[in-house]
Image (cartoon, rainbow, N blue to C red; front, side):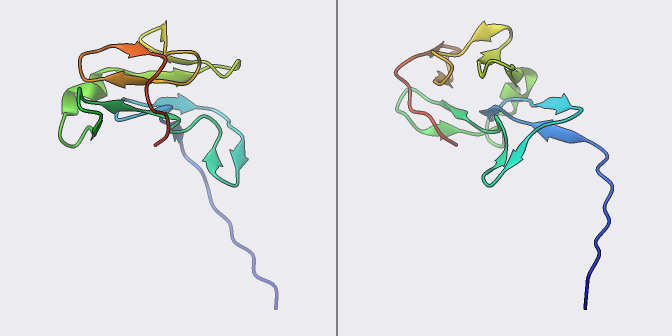
Length: 100
């Protein structure tokens, strides 16, 4: 028996910086771990705890993007050295923990 599944994708959204607003895409590479460039870095508070938009909705007013060179940006500024994190005070830079 052969199964056929049809689906229609209306929109594709990627969130390079977990907690911040994402970016709408017309196309993206899909790998074993999900969308290329999705949730590569996160926001931390001063003590290193991951902050989320559920508890801090103001972060949704900032957008993270992932460009064709693999650079993550927040508001046009580069985040660290392509990988880094932003803390709750708005600082982005190298030396922060990475991952989602």
